[in-house]
Image (cartoon, rainbow, N blue to C red; front, side, top):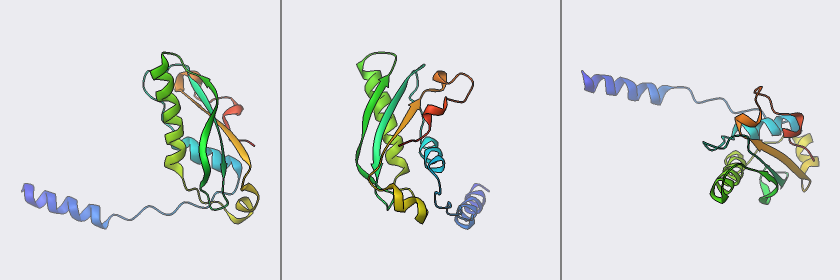
Length: 135
C-alpha cells in the first residue's frame, strides 16, 4: 500500500502543471512588488529596517552589488549584519527580473532605493509609501 501511494504521489508531482511564466514587469511598482515578494525578515528583528541602493541593466540583472544606504536595526552587530544580509539576499533571489521592453529601455544604470522592514516596523501590515522602489 505504501509503495502504491508513493508511486501515485510521484506521478502527481511529475504530471503537475508547471507554473505559468510571470508577465514581464511593466512599471516600477511591479518591480518593487517583485523584489518585496522575495523578502523575509530574520526572526527577532523587531522594528528594524534597511534601505538598499542598486542599479539594473536592461536585461534585468544588477549592476554590481546592492549598497546599504540606511540602517535601523535593533540589537547587536550580529543582528545588524543578519538583517542587512537578508535584504541583500532578497534582491539576489529575485534576479534576474524580466522587464517589458518600454521599462527596460529606460531603466539601465539608474540608481534605485528600496526599504526592507520587519513586520513589526509596519504595525498595520502596510509600510509607508517610502518602501516602494524609487529612483
